[in-house]
Length: 131
Image (tube, rainbow, N blue to C red):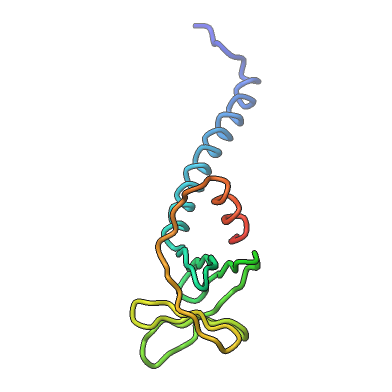
């Protein structure tokens, strides 16, 4: 019985096939990660300005400001059990089902909804800034 490929060529074909399979797995994982990030992101408006909040985990929130700055907010303990994230300058807290943005000692109620991808170009810009 005759072999189709010499033994020397088999490893050269094996490596590209393994690389192709691994790249396909990575693409599937990135789609899954993107869906998870989308579920953990809120699109909020306050004072006719748009804010994006992404909950990284229970200890950190990334806040994309209207001017494009990315602000990291960290979990702050509360006695009432309400959600509260902040740093030295900005704070986001929950009052019932509403979110309140506290900036420069002024509190503003935020109107939030789940993040939806409406425009592909806008989505790409938002994703780049929130990374």
